[in-house]
Length: 31
Image (cartoon, rainbow, N blue to C red; front, side, top):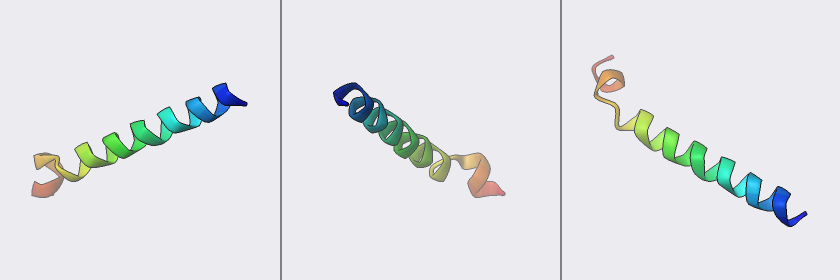
């Protein structure tokens, strides 16, 4: 259960960071 919770946290953190990069991407801003 602890491992599953940790994995879920890592995935959530990864998606949050990915969303941050996408929102700050010059390519998408130019689009």
